[in-house]
Amino acid sequence: MIDINLIRTDPTAVAAALEKRGCKADLDEIIKLDETRREIIGRTETLKAEKNKVSADIPRLKKAGENVEPIFAKMRELGDRISENDAHLKAAEDALKNALLCLPNLPDPDVVAGEKENNKVIKVWGEKPSFDFAIKNHVELCEALRLIDYERGVKLAGNGSWLYTGRGAVMEWALLNYFITTHIKDGYTFILPPHMLNYECGLGAGQFPKFEDDVYRVETAEGGAARRFMLPTAETALVNIYRGEILQESELPKKLFAYTPCYRKEAGSYRAEERGMIRGHQFDKVEMVQVTSPEQSKAAFEELVNKACALVEGLGLHYRLSKLAAGDCSASMARTYDIEVWIPSMGIYKEVSSVSNANDYQARRNMTRYRGADGKIGYVHTLNGSGLATSRILPAIVEQYQNADGSVTVPEVLRAFVGCDVLK
Image 1 (cartoon, helix red, strand yellow):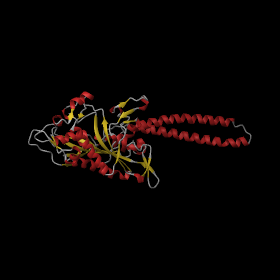
Image 2 (image 1 turned 120 degrees about the vertical axis):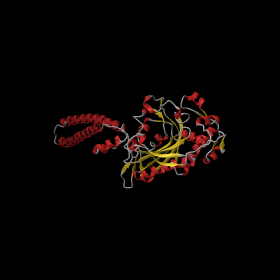
Image 3 (image 1 turned 180 degrees about the vertical axis):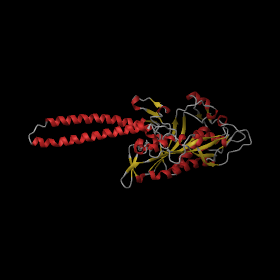
Image 4 (image 1 turned 60 degrees about the vertical axis):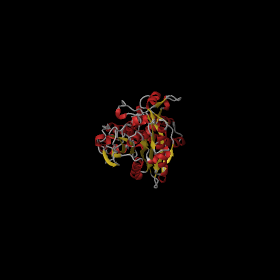
């Protein structure tokens, strides 16, 4: 959530920043709501001061033997007016909060305006694999090697679903073990969160209220009031762990990671570019999150980028790192770098990790704060990065590591988990 003080003091700069991501926000309406809220607060404070003053006269008047009934009548009148103002204030605060909740985050100053066409490749690692034989796509390879059963996956759950089977399931588990082992070694705390979350988690992460229709809602025994949903990413859970808490600066940064399936409503026709496991309603992902002070934020972002890149490099996969333009960053994020792996059969790069910094946007929504050494309380920064999503890593492995005889070489870092050097 954007700080209302920024909008109040420099609406032109805020509007210009939002314009970079293609958002034309009605800041005048937000400013009016804020002015109304502050006006009601001012009137209420005046009434409360008057009530206190009138109340202070009661002992004196009683002592003097004067009639205090008019004073009590005045106090009742002031109390009614205060209660009425409180109701107006709540309505004004709710309207202001809802307006602020619908605004996306402000992009960092160095993030360029525009959409995907303005993304900038800032690093390329490894050489594109070359083949002296006719290559197969990952669907053909996974079916021939009996790693994935697409047909029965669709039978069980519809389009965008698949079954890992036999060595395919082992490969998936090997990838997860590789990621998890690395993060533990790097000092991150392993979290296994609930998959079904409450509405406040979506609100605090910045996905609600604007993107409520993008998640799978869950009907519960409590009825509609519970408003639960299946997590679209573990980030939604992790950034809410300290919701409503005040951490000590000495505790920061908090370095967390989680393994979960991710559940998403994926729109699309499942065309050739999205065949197999490239796009799905459920996929496995290991997610990293850091909760930091503002001063630690930049270093934390670089650490998360380097960790995600190192995981892909450890697998020996050719990839590129791209800095996203403002309009291509998700609504909650001030900056994002995408790690994009090469899919040979498609001749394109596909994102396998997004590393993002929300600055204090999520913390303002879920009231996660910290107390500094000087005793002052401020909002934390939250950062996240996939480490990694397997549904695109596995296709990249089988395609980049395929051999002329239809076999697939197992990346060296996975061999101890898989138990063989080649899948054939």
